[in-house]
Image 1 (cartoon, one colour):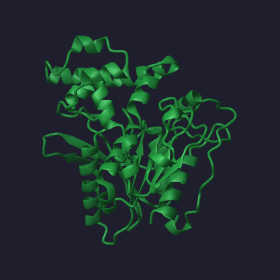
Image 2: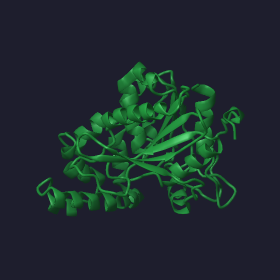
Image 3: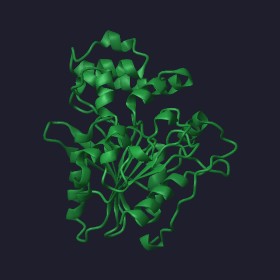
Image 4: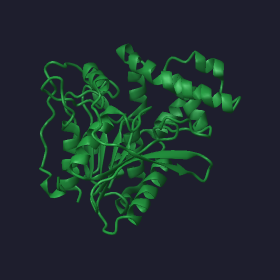
Length: 333
């Protein structure tokens, strides 16, 4: 399909009547899992610090736009929200690429450091490297866009705010989906009530990877304390904060939250968060005065966390990618 046939899509999100509530709208898409209609081309970047990053490409048409995608906590190129986006991007012949954060591609990374929600320094070199490499093989300059989901969206928004107008030298537009804009509020939400189900899910892989690191780097942190850890707050206090130069969890969450950077964003940005996202309380979503004029806020009443599935049963995943692609094509060129 040609890019000039992309229709304007601004339909409001409507949740299926058969899938009520933020938890159901979060969990069902994760369990349903769309089949990928494509095959990735994996490239490994060997880094100057001795580590590596795995990059999964989906090649598009000659001189088509490029979309860079950053995944969420413990996600990757096979996450359901990424597959749904990629399936639609393929229909339009756009290039797209998922850049895995360190340790998220199926192979443990080599260094003590991993990744975190405020890692805008990683976003900076990743964006610039992928664009430079892409332009070596594409003679005509085409638009470049970026999508960040959940944790990846937080790091991307923080980078946008830090860069200000300079971000426009690299990206034509950005979409950020289900972002924990206020990490303290998100952390408190995850550590309470039913949401502890999600915490248990995340900790199962985070703790496993951390114990692998402890075997390679004895004394890196307290393994006995980690084994008893049952909350995201405690995990970040034991592992994430000290490994990445923060004093403690509170310092990490305060410095890394992207909400404070939204007024400084100068690139057209689509911000999508559902009011019933169990990871992000609606009470802390930004109002119009807390974002720059280049930020478009779309806050549906429903949708869950990176869910946004639609009727008819058993559901489809098209609303989110079509809303994003329409924004890129019609408002960011």
